[in-house]
Image (cartoon, rainbow, N blue to C red; front, side, top):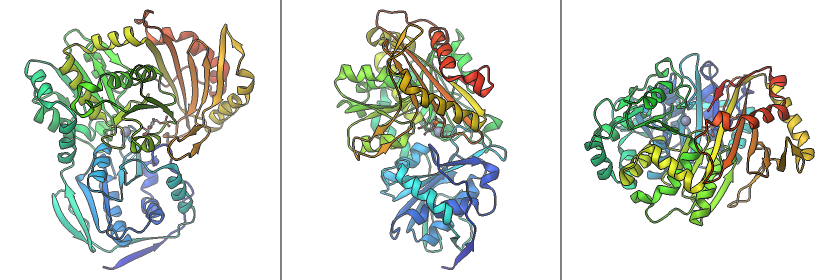
Length: 543
Ligand code: G6P
Ligand code: ZN
């Protein structure tokens, strides 16, 4: 095999964030940019002789080109085998499964998740390790260091692989296996859920819409829901992946999946609606007349997991990211199982899952998943909901409201301020941090501050410490404000403000969250000076 070496000067901006390196597509399209980052990942790996690498992406613009580059870099690096999804497609959870299933050394997941795609959109590259999960911070920091000094990359001098043809090919001594992106993942889902019960529910007239948002879950949802579970054709909408997601924003929230929301709120809408994001790891769950917040969904899935065959033996524990509401904590308490609060980012669940300390994890950012893979998994959440609906034979609304009557309701909302000037956003956070010592124990508008800190996580498995993970101000009545800057934005800074208030089991559960949280919203502005410092009078997105 002949190897072509290219000399380069380092790019100064290849620092991975919450979820790998994410930039504008045009940044990734600069000559040598993607190559340099992938080479930096490879340079950080141990010996790869005899090892397998999984490669796939969400099909966004530039996906196929980067896959060809990655294969040539992998061949030069000396991997034995690459497994790549047909057409270059793999949902993020399916990639995680393939890494585990094939005992691969790791995988490259090409995606910018829920960010728009296309030449003017975003692109991203993330490395996952052998447990199938995103590389831990220690590894990504090493990669970052490497990107700052890297002066060459090496590629096998071979022709492009035919990504449309399933089967084995060869590229400079490297075995390239192009696989059906759906098959192994669908087989895994079949081991977890009662497909017969769900099939019977569809056969008896249960109706659903799944919005794939022109992204990667289209083929997965069509094969599983319409194929294996017998849902009528047309259950999956926007099911063909497109490089720019049909010109849309593949983020399954109430802003970008508004049509689905409106459909579910209409009297003649279907019984159940769901959506997933660009790379298939997020989920949106809406029952007829009832939107389920991601934080509530986590609590509900954990409370009802026993109804699915894969979790019949019980769950070991639950983990949630710090800004996620405490609804799941009440479930864990009742079940007498461990509850963990981690920083934002799925990678923080990896150790807890590997150690068998938790089974189900979730985040307010529309991610839920379990120990079946090491990523959050949109379709998994949808299938677990379907399994629960089939077993309980009740509506989503009935299940949610009876949960609140048992556990109480955590009113919850997140206000995002997108593309804020980075200096202003950092200044706001810094001023908040400086205020923390005075805040603890003080009284604000009649509410006593129980704690005020910048969240530090100590991983209970390996003892690693992650500091400065978000400012939390908790009150003695159980309500809470959290402020942090997003780690996934690509332009300027995104300020996220998370607001939560607890209403006990016999309290009022039918308020609109924005009005139930109104006084906290005002208080957040007063404490942080959001309007004044960002110049914004209202959030860009409310979820
Ligand atoms: C990605 C990560 C999640 C995270 C979310 C929001 O989806 O996988 O773990 O919760 O981004 O992160 P951010 O830093 O933008 O709040
Ligand atoms: Zn995603």
